[in-house]
Length: 324
Image (cartoon, rainbow, N blue to C red):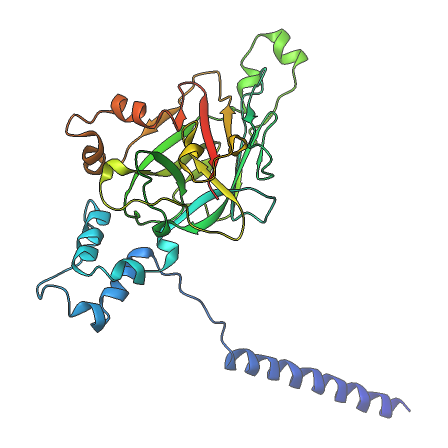
């Protein structure tokens, strides 16, 4: 009986060793596949290397991916090969718009607004979007669309969130930096304040691929501003989408649409950090802004230009309008 048990144990151990060896062989036979993530510039270079397009470029053309203004370099290529604009991947031109219903959003920013008597709010008749919420904090959510489908509206200006690398036609970039609630602020007051008030750690966060925007303690949102001041084509109606959506736009913007309804607009107020506030605007592409504002372009001039859409000093006001 004992000898039988020994034989059975030996057989079992041999089987395990065989299984382990087989597992090693299988693992070696099926190496883990690694998917390469292409950068936008790599994608662009790959496309212009295609004989369909490369034959249209000047013989001595060299794409300089390290140029100080890569976008202008790309634009110059697209001017030579107009069809290339629509041949490029949609993701390079992604923009974010505000969905009307509680659909699954692609990108969400949670901004921790001022805790001390905070007054962040949403007012207006188009405030039913479940992707914009306020209270002590502000949550802005967006769905992605192809920015190439948007064009300036004659006599008007509006903005969408930038979610791609390349600039769509008729657009120019500006950025708004939000100084969100400081997590130390509740500890900076007098002893009585520290004793009787509860500390609220900074809750600024985000979901989804938000680049080139940033969200880390504070938030910087990048926008494409569409203005007919850039010249070129304009549009009368906004691109269709699987859900109703809105954009950042001046008050009464919806009146330019064929079916105006006063319930289509709202204003978002962000009560930003009170202490040592560092809110600011930036306008990265000076050459493009000079095409809109002229050679007299200045920071204050540009801020005044975008103020009907997004404005503010220590706090921020954003106007939105449903367009589809």
